[in-house]
Image: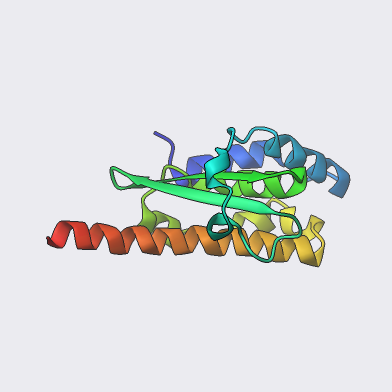
Length: 146
């Protein structure tokens, strides 16, 4: 099983330090195309991430102590940004998600390639991932206290 560190290292292989901004955008778009199909019944306002430049849905499932994320956007850049975060945080314990800030985005040059509105959208996706992690911890605590 891959650790968060392993997953970040895999991203480092995708995004090299000498990539131009255009090359980074192409890699982000490629990652957006790798997202799993997203069920239509999960395309609800409650699962829509606010503050994104385009409509983006993010859902999570908590199973066996791990959180799994899915996302969908018709805009490939938004889908790719979600895919980057999902590639690191999906399949992780909620506490591990909360302990791992997305500093790797800056290290990989992704943040420097984004417009302010796309950076804001990316921050909102990460905020939702953290909120889902907190909710999973709370639900788990209630389930084990009964």
